[in-house]
Length: 585
Image (cartoon, rainbow, N blue to C red; front, side, top):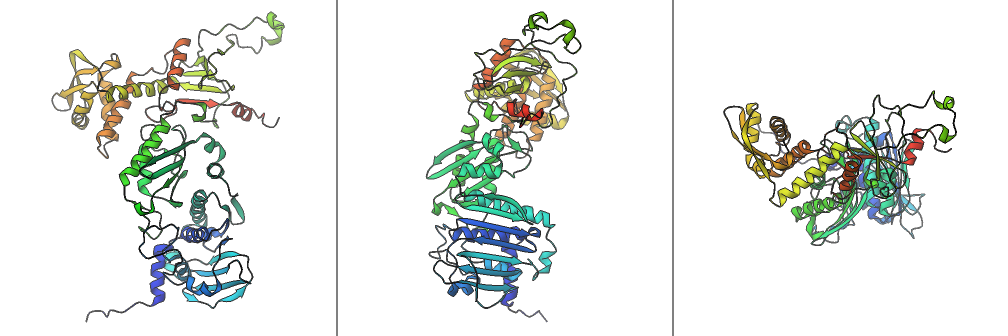
């Protein structure tokens, strides 16, 4: 006999539905804080015990829930946030009417609420879907939601929770994102009696500084762009400031914090050419989109969106970030400190030959015997050119290890520039400009060069022969696993053809997914720039060092090389004092 079809009980239905909305403590925290924001709270406090597994308290000073509506508030699909049922122009964070009943189905939920003007607060309790009576209670204006023993009613879900520390981290991230989305609201987060952050109502830059860290925020640059009724504002870091994860990325759309993959991809593509693989940009972005051009009813968690014009959103984000990254370099775009920097001098160092000799001991009023024991015989004074210190990268004063240019800025900061990385970026930008204008010159070889490769590498290069030809590099097949090079880019000036082709094949292999024309072009430009650039180990004249720094200051995206590594670092006075223990002296 076939099995009998039956209706599930309301309690079981609620527990099943709760799994879609409340999959971990962080989700419960998010839903409760969103309710507080929708209620017009000006201050929200979140208290976690054991990562929220044992207890979550969310306290707000919002409008509260009238005693007569408290029982209705915990019914499934009961909401005060939709003016109609068209699901268009949704202006609140919540609207589905699922959060409170879902929490109450999976845990022990207590709501204590008091609207302004109500004589006292009222309390209602839901435990595993069982609803208690509404009773009087003591409470301030606003609402306090208490969640205890999460998933006690659904043990199958509880056993999949991670450690309390991991759950606490996820809950803290949820509150962090909500606090960034509503800087006009004061937030306090306490986890196991430890205050994680306590921020007042403040402007958006101040909120970013409080939650990203002041040093990070001080390096970020403001942006403001608009396209067809969509406005993008916020702060984004220069390419030299990256992180190993996406932890310092915040996206807010119409006041709603989101983890939308479309926006994350747009941000990643905007930085693709200027940061190293495996690193992630730092940004706090806010989009204002017409409500009718946005669908927030995509997922119960409401963290993913559908845009009516997704391509337009991507173009807006990439264009605004691109213009920001094209700004000339300044000391604000440089990494600030070197926590692992050794104070011991390198075993060997070469300095620019133009430094004047050390004054004689007599001229300084010292006897020879007083300092001969400790003064290095080759020590020389270094004096910056006052006319050049006013430039962002300062005046060059020395070349270290024939690789790094040491310069002094007007504020006394020391700037260390990697000559190869810097020239590589300058070269790539020039090649890119030539390519865009269709003027990349090639140099035919008097004797074509045969380069032996693996069959796979040869196929990769020949598959991109059209791109390479447009870059001045003409190749053709020459038997299995070999290619014939007929011409090279004129700008490279006698490069090693075999080394160049091997490197290009390697770049194309790394950018093979997706096999996009633009990705292959970027890879080829980066590798060509590397082969054309000043090498580490080449001694530069003072004039060459100065010219390189001035070119960097006028070239877009010069803070990082073609592979995303920093081209220069800054050591400020504060950094020096910290390293030598002089802070507070």
